[in-house]
Structure formats: C-alpha cells, structure tokens
Length: 220
Image (tube, rainbow, N blue to C red; front, side):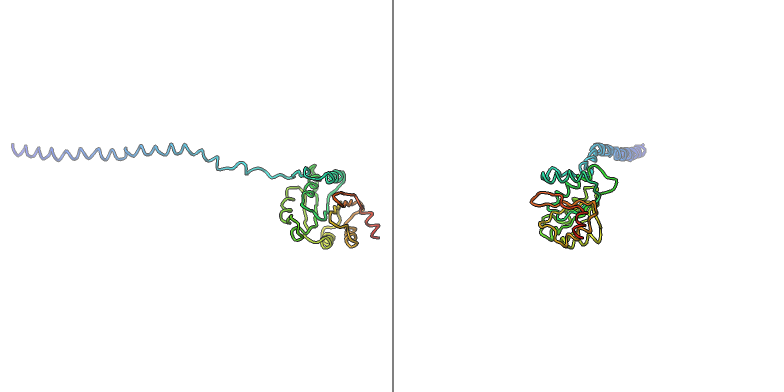
C-alpha cells in the first residue's frame, strides 16, 4: 500500500502542469482579437479623399476676355467702326501696352466667325524699351480665337517681313509716334487691297485716313 500511495501521489503531481498549460495556448490568439478591431475606426476617417481634388483648379480657361472696359472713348469708337466692317486680317503697327489690341480682338471675335481672324503686330517690344514683352503679349493673345503673328522688328523691317510672309490685309492700325515715311507708305501700298481700311492714331485720336485704293493711286 505505501508503494501504491506513493505512485498515486506521483501521478497526481505530474497531471497538474498539463492542465495549467492548456489555457495559455487558448488565450494567446483570443487576446489579439481586440487589436484587430482597431483598423475600423481608422478606416472611418478615410473621407479625407475628396479634399485631395482641388475643384478651383479645374476652371476652364476663358476664350475671349472682354477688355473694352479699360479702353478710351476714342478706342471704343474705333471698335464700333471695326465691327461694322468685314475683317478677316488685321495689321497693327506699334501695340503700346497691348490693351487696345486685346479689346479690338474681343470686338472682332465675340460674335463668332466661321474662319479665325488673322492678327499681325509689328513692335519691338522689350527690345525697343516697351514694358510689354513679346512673350507676355503672345500669352495674352491665346485667350482669343484668332491666329496671332507677332513680328518683333522695327517698322521698316517688320513691314518688309509682312509683305513677304503674310501678304495683304483687310485692316491696318497705325499707332506709331510718326506718320509713315515714303518707304513705309510704299510697303503699306503692297499690303493693302482696294477695300483695305487704314486707321492712324494722332494725339490719342483715330482717323480713317487712307483706303487701299487711295494708297495705290498715291504710290502711282
């Protein structure tokens, strides 16, 4: 009997660690289950995605900017006269700050045309001391449905370039400080059709000076 009691006591002690070891393995993965619920409140904060798309940056560019509000009264009279003409091509000699040119193009294009207006400008821009640079003016002209051709040269060289490259035009705006020289008038004669209208600016006022037909007669 003492040996059996001793054997039973030994068996009873060895069985106790086996029972205590089983809850540790079961509690391990179950204790990790609360942490798996943490991503749910974080995923609820994902509505920040709409702020990543700037709506203001998606505004479409304007195709024709109205700048007639800054034009002088004489310029507005000029624009009204131009609107009454059938104009497809314009030559402007000396653009100044460019605002008159933009307002004129708005007057010519805001009603729409089946064919785009051809706009040619002769000016030295920054090379001649003009505050308006060639690059900035070209960028502003992109807002209008017109084909712009800028000639950054002196008047004599620019007129010669226009004669050889672009040919005759429907409208001429002369806003140079001095009236045309005989050589410049000869170049204008070659650029004008019989129906071409020539406007010249003097002391801020525009006058419809010579048509293409009159220029041709004078050159003859």
